[in-house]
Length: 333
Figure (tube, rainbow, N blue to C red):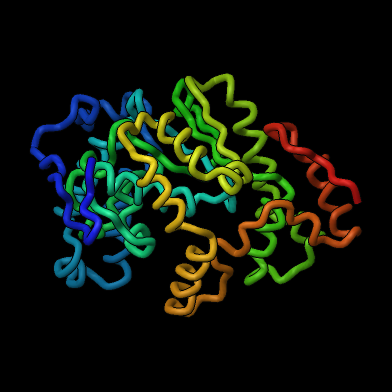
């Protein structure tokens, strides 16, 4: 597939959309969703819950102007039709602070060029990334760019992202598990939560935010044998060999005919420094007190800790991690 080099105007035209659905994008009658397992229930009822919250906050007159009960019911029906799990769905389970945004941006850039013949910037990838993967809790969010049928937003197979633990409806499915060295993961979460916790590393290890990390590893470690296929993506491998790792991911997701130039361009345009700058600008514009994504992106952050801090971290990791996915559990103090 050739792309014009001077601008985003493609030499080929992307395939036009039609009203017909791909066989794997079949609609499921709403009543069957109640009988068979679906994605989390709140994904379907989110339009109604939003309508009720808006009605309680502003009264019925405001609802008539923005979100009507009829529109809410229509959105609920649409959600039910597409929340049904499909056999070819791929679950993308990422531990928090393991490079989810980074990989998401690369994925969006690659698929925009592959399927739409468009090269997009990192800023544009922040918007377009939602076209190519979704959270299992599917909802329209009432964004104008997402109001067309849900099925048109995801290629086949659908990539469903989650930070959550293994759930029973995921059994027998293919899963892409994105992880990071437990020590680096905990250190990154410690700095990310400092904006509101403001505590020492030792105290942080007693919080729910820290307990999440071993719970994620243990949950998915126990679930590996229950899955139809698993691809383990390590943050360290992405940092060391991003091109080859992205290639491996695309093969697992059955995305073909992607050129080496497309992959290389996506890797170069999503360097950690650029992601950090993008998120820092968003933080400043929102006026929020938080730590930007892409804070450091370093591998081996344990070397920056004091002997006392590293000792506490080693003790925590050794006591809570039953599954380490091959990572070293304890570092020399």
